[in-house]
Image 1 (cartoon, rainbow, N blue to C red):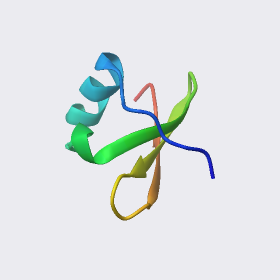
Image 2 (cartoon, rainbow, N blue to C red):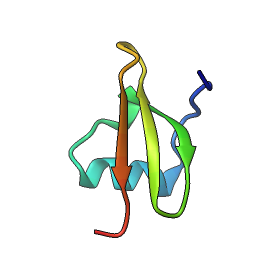
Image 3 (cartoon, helix red, strand yellow):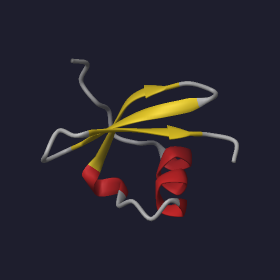
Length: 52
């Protein structure tokens, strides 16, 4: 499993727009169509589609 990185400003704004707390999520993979998040404490993954 890849290590997650802290979200940058643009990513934090996208997380806030989806009612997720940016302090609890790490970015595993970021592409133009989606990005994959890992929860800091539970380790669960979540994929978020971009554009819509």
